[in-house]
Length: 151
Image (cartoon, rainbow, N blue to C red; front, side, top):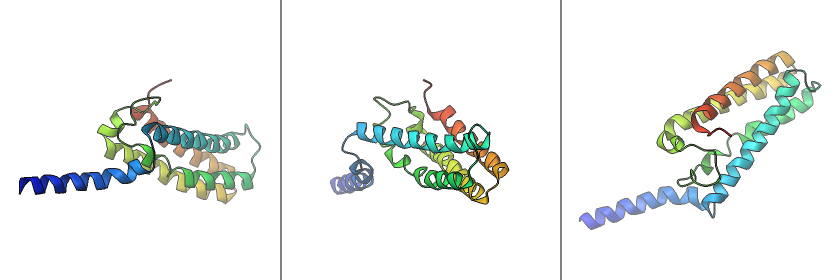
């Protein structure tokens, strides 16, 4: 009976782990994937921030396009935080895996702020954009402060 129970637990654990690992052939692929997505997030948020601060001419159409892209890509990196991907060429701190619920709460907060940013970008108001960019930046910084090793 104990063997049957252990086998059932092993199968259940494997069923949970395989979908995340199956997305990436190697742990290094998961790391590169999430780094690439984070780079794209920074690029699109950076464009919005430069418009919001006047360092780039404000263009409502371009702001809305960048916000639409950001809305999609902010969901992409988190499945790539697979077990074992805290080692190697990464700035991810091991606390991500130790505090997974807290880490994901920060991710969810950022995604909620990006939804508001998307609405602000579509409003055509640079003032609304400025406020929303600040809130997204604050959410990103909070997570990076806790879970990203400094350069």
